[in-house]
Amino acid sequence: MRTLQHPGRFDPVRIKSKHSDSARHFRVTLQPGKSLYDGLVEPMRAANIEAASTTILGGWYAELNYCVAPPDPQKEAIVRYSAPIYGGESYMVFGNATLGVSMKGTPMVHCHAAFVREDGALKGGHIIPETTIVGRDGISVLVTAMDDFVLRQAYDPETKIPLFQPFART
Image (cartoon, rainbow, N blue to C red; front, side, top):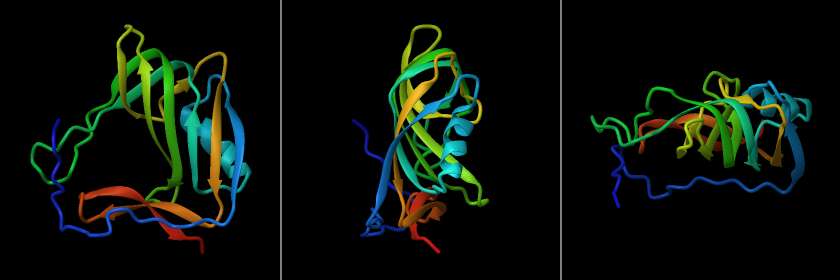
């Protein structure tokens, strides 16, 4: 087991949270040939959803790309993302994706998953949604949309990386 020490100033309120009086629950099917990003963002945009938590039930991807986030060797931040890793045609066993708003103001999908790569290796990591392409059968996703707040990517001074943080809807 390893211990990660946050490089920034300690914040006694580590987890920031908001309460939503309403939430919508529904299922989306990721369409074959679309990127994971477009497959999630397009139906959310159509439903006027900016913040959601999703469970990806598993399925085939024509191409899966990912990265890992080991501790930052320079200790400037809590982690340092690796270069993209090509997984090829892969089967996602299970995944979770969060939809929010990037620092640029565009939709952002942050996804963690366990998957079997084209070479048969069982791996896990941060899926790169823009370059991960849904396979021929489509994939079911369970969605919980948070209606009363938005998740925005913002710099976190404790970890020294941008993280999703909840903000009141304006």
